[in-house]
Image (cartoon, rainbow, N blue to C red; front, side):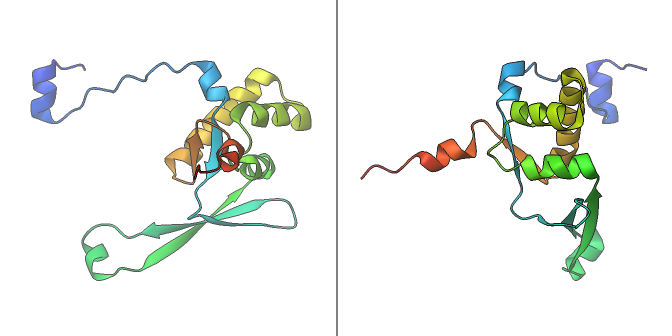
Length: 143
């Protein structure tokens, strides 16, 4: 049931935010980069485990400042993508690698990768850079 704007404010319901339209070329040139605060390890099987620190919330968090760790084990393809999230490879390059190595259709790879990276981004383990990290490294300060 939809409520007019005034009623939704009174009842504390928020209007859903509109999702901005982003040009596909912009997305294809984004470079995902791992959060440096996340520790990870690769097993002999090729799988990657992310170790994420979780802070306690609520009243108990004020008394107990300790953190607990959560281990997230990525599957084979997820682990492969994780290793490519280094700021050097763009979204397009990762899609190309998935198409070539796992024989996926391009559209299938794009959609799956976009959803996967969205999940990782919401969990705070990756973010996106507009340009390749290597371009930033090549810039030298002027003296």
